[in-house]
Length: 358
Image 1 (cartoon, rainbow, N blue to C red):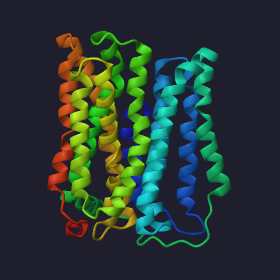
Image 2 (image 1 turned 135 degrees about the vertical axis):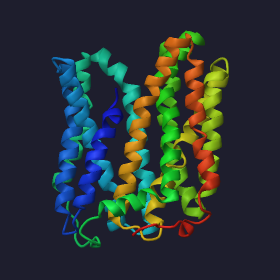
Image 3 (image 1 turned 90 degrees about the horizontal axis):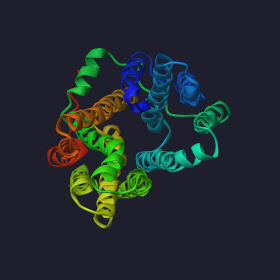
Image 4 (image 1 turned 180 degrees about the horizontal axis):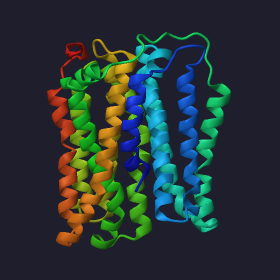
């Protein structure tokens, strides 16, 4: 179970923390600094997983990691709105998502070699270093002169409900969750599927699957550039949906590496290309404040985390029942077409999105 699985619950917790007490805007928002420090410290504890004496302790450590990501990621949107101009926010969303994708790709590529060089417990310890580095960076550099004050002292539960009932927000939640149903299922099961059903070695199968986050590094950067040049989100969401849908089908239906490689690359592009626009769009909606953006980002993390938790379990259960990976992978692939549907249903311009705030 990855940290995203347990992160669904911690995102709910942090979601309500953001509602009741949003970040302040002094030299550096004290509450945000405090939460960021806690978040990075929690991410670093993943290094202790290798020495967990029992399953309960392991679950608690993984939950702490998910909680850390929830603290860090949910505060990002409001801080970007405070510190950067609108066009700069799109660029920053692309850069931060590219860094996330690069981190995933590096961890996938280096896990096995590190485990061979040292025991696997020590290898896990190496992955704590980014968390420690992030913690130190926030402690040392976590101050900024000036800043745009955040409006309001919080957001009521009634207002939260109004934000989540917004049609555009609901479409974003469904689209992102649908893509991540496919992404998590494929990332978890494609290596085994390729080895058992396509006769591909585990090392090559792992390399093929590792292309998903690696391609994502370049796809999100391209997505940021496209988002700056194309005002309407429809084309970007629909195009990404077509790529993710067709690439997903090809990834498990096509025979042989010669066809699988391009299918996985197309899948990786479609799965990441839309993300900068996804994160920026709530900030551009009428009536949106940093507090309301925190609600949307927290909801995205919660819905997506739940999708990533359920999807691999569902595919594995269908594999046990049917004896084949095809049914489960087909269902996961079908979910990804929600992104294409969102591309047609989203308003042509963000300014057309009703706020539905009380």
